[in-house]
Length: 259
Image (tube, rainbow, N blue to C red; front, side, top):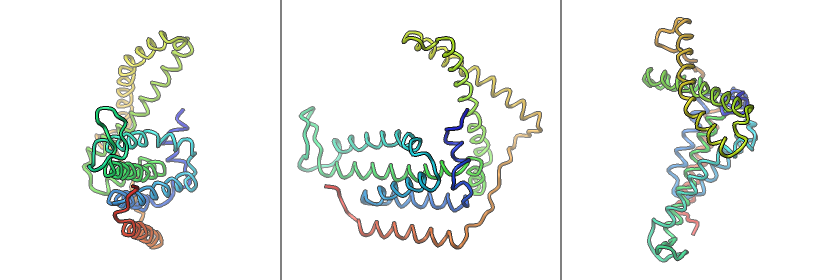
C-alpha cells in the first residue's frame, strides 16, 4: 500500500547500507555550510550535488524527488518574492505600479540568497530522509543522549502516521467504489464524512495497537536499533575534503551578488 512513500524509499535505496553516522555528519555539516554562505553560489551547488546523489547514487526516482521538492521550492520562492519587494533600499529595479511596490537591488540579492539557502538546507535533509530509515535515525538521537521520553513519543508518532494514512486510504477507496466522488456535491460531502470519521477510526486503531503492544510485554519503554558503527578513515577523509572544498568556495565567492 505504501510502496511509493518516503519510508519505503528510505528502506530500499542504494545508499541504505552506507554508515549511518557518516550520512548524518555529512548531511548536517553540509547544511551548516549552506547556511553560513554569504553568496547563493555554494547553496545552489550543494542543492545540485545532493540532488545528484539522491537521484543517481541512491536511485530515488526523479519524479518522486521533484514532487518532494515542490513544497520547499514554493515556500522558498514566496520568500524570495516577499523579500525582493519589502526588503532593501536604493534605486528600484522594477516597479509594478501597485501600492508603490518596488524591487530593489538589495532586496533582490537578499531574497535570492535566502531562497538558495532554503533549497540547499532542504536538499541536505532530503538526502538524509530518503537514504536513512527512521528506526536508524532514532538510534542516532539516542546516541546523542536525547531524553528517552522524547524519542519514544517520536517513535509512536511515526508509527501512527502510517495508521492514519492506511485508514484514510481505506475510507477513500470505500467511498470511491460507492460513487462518493461522482460529482462536485458528492465529493465535498464524502470529504466531510472522511474527515469527521477519520479521527475516530484512527483513535480506535491506536487503542488496538496499544493493546497489542501490552500483550507483547510493553513496559513503557521501546527498544530501538543501536548504531555502533564507526566512521572509517576513508569516509572521514572524503568528508573533510568535501567540506573544505565548500568552505574554499565560500571564501572565493564572498560578497558575490546576482545583481
